Length: 271
Image (cartoon, rainbow, N blue to C red; front, side, top):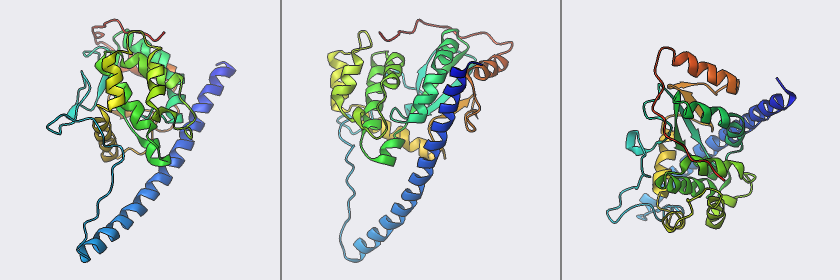
């Protein structure tokens, strides 16, 4: 193993540990806020006053009937999954991630070539669940806005290349740069054919924001508490940060033994 690979794996482990510390702090804050909110509701009821909590990220994302709009091709329960790769691939990699999350960025930089190779060979498909954990930890809306833009890219059949561009250009987590739609649209220019009027309107209008929020709610309800959370055929394989690209490939090969690869279509690549 080269020193560069060892350094990359060490960086991924360190980023994951740091993210988990932030997640634990967030969970503690959430418990405190839940208790405080309960007190407010009781006091409000006693005084005959209704208390409303503003949702600053709720604009856009539903039709005239108030229904949540899932991106094209989304699958799974409540259509909360964006699939990449052959639908009939024998193995499935499930990834819960946040475009603003540094540990997710470390994971992507280490595993993306292997994941793409497995997808493109028909050995595996990837199912993405988009999460807004960092917005909850640090405030801001970069996680939400980037996830909405990625869902808009899915509408244009360009989720994978745009997903990769977002991680290749991820700002520091303290810099909520992805909250700016101009940044997201500029990065879309790196994906040939993506920056269309329809994509631009989807990004600036927040078409899929309620869908992203529903995806994040499902992540919380599932009991996961860190990103990335990575499952292979339903089994968590990244919880101890010991996963490597080689071991991922070996696990997929073992799981696929005796099975036919899926039917592959050509995947676009970013410029």
